[in-house]
Image (cartoon, rainbow, N blue to C red):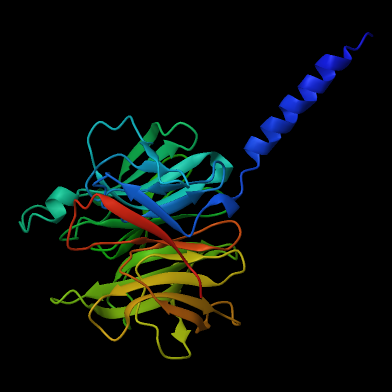
Length: 329
């Protein structure tokens, strides 16, 4: 076999270049990523480690956008027959999926008691952003006055769990697209709706229960642990030290700790990013870090353990400038 030395050198250089492109690290992400001219009103944020970008959802029922570290962005999702507001986002790398909690924001905010809205799971191809499945969930909770699919998680085998804050339930969708009612809040201690949630690899969900009062302050809140194999055995997680005032969005980190956002703007809890740790398999927990932040809804964790939040503006749904900010404890 005859080898061409020059071709080998060129091929090696090309291979090295491709490897360099493919091994993007989030060291390139600045502490502040400014995004201009989107009018997106993002409720959910997710970090995509495959291409070093952020994904932002849209309460305004616009496409989910993909944001580069320099703040430039492109619309990512497509293929929907009708627009939906979107909230929580979850990447399922194992199955190449972007999982999205969708809801009818127009009906949710019209103050008409006869319109209930709807909740949906939308599943997109992680590489292309094209819609693969759109699964209506509302029929599983016909007793609900309104619906608000809020957050989303996926377990080890691909089952998806979607919290519905207003219906006070958690839905489950398996890999075949079959939707069932996984859990309803009949928990006597706390009557809050299921808001933020995440899956723990030991086989349970951690769910933030939360209500707000007429002044939009957090009321009747808690964290609960729900085993996947027996969701009726829900356990109230005791927070040992003071300072926990309820979570909106939350994430379980690789080290097992939970980081969550409080955006109770006018209460003593204020706007905070809080980190919880547990030595008892989440039967009890304690606050190990807490920091005041500007109003935000949830948090994204990068592979090197950096926390990024969206600096929200609850007074302006059509604000055009958004800041994704790294929070350091």
